[in-house]
Image (cartoon, rainbow, N blue to C red; front, side, top):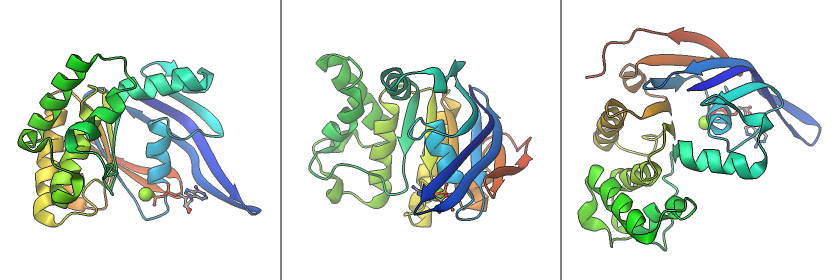
Length: 229
Ligand SMILES: Nc1ncnc2c1ncn2[C@@H]1O[C@H](COP(=O)(O)OP(=O)(O)O)[C@@H](O)[C@H]1O
Ligand SMILES: [Mg+2]
């Protein structure tokens, strides 16, 4: 469970202050599939990065699985992030010099798994996204849709409770986007909680809840979506 209460965050650059989040409150329950929508600059990425412990915040409280993250030191916060969170970015963020196997291995190396455990997890994760046959390929040898599948495998390999995705289909054509959405729904159905930022209204409608963000605040929450197909 992820619970934010009145979280505020401002960026200050050259005496310009931008209020990215303003008293942002939201509760995400285990098993949810949340779509976060809103205009560009409204604070969606800031919210997701704070959720994933990639960024801190100025005011308010954030509990991740019951742990007050502001009370953790850097080391414990990194450990919590590594154990609980998988990230997927719009631009995939794969390492071009590494083959698919080694790309998926990157976050596992911080987790204390031994080599055999890592190998099993990598193979399972790549199998789940339909790319087990390409373990020795490099990212540039794949289509965008396939690269995003590798990024999803990398996010899943550590069995995170939460998958956070920032416009995961933003760089994909519609057919590849549909494939990635189908995969995310499957992952959610097998128990992983998902928070996904999207510009695509049709995609948002496939989530179990839509959070509309405006000016750094939750403007509207749309509940009771149709059951995920
Ligand atoms: N690192 C940063 N430094 C300064 N301002 C930032 C930074 N990141 C985001 N912002 C500002 O914070 C606001 C929210 O940004 P963001 O969370 O990226 O919005 P969204 O993802 O909804 O487009 C915007 O006004 C943006 O310009
Ligand atoms: Mg953004």
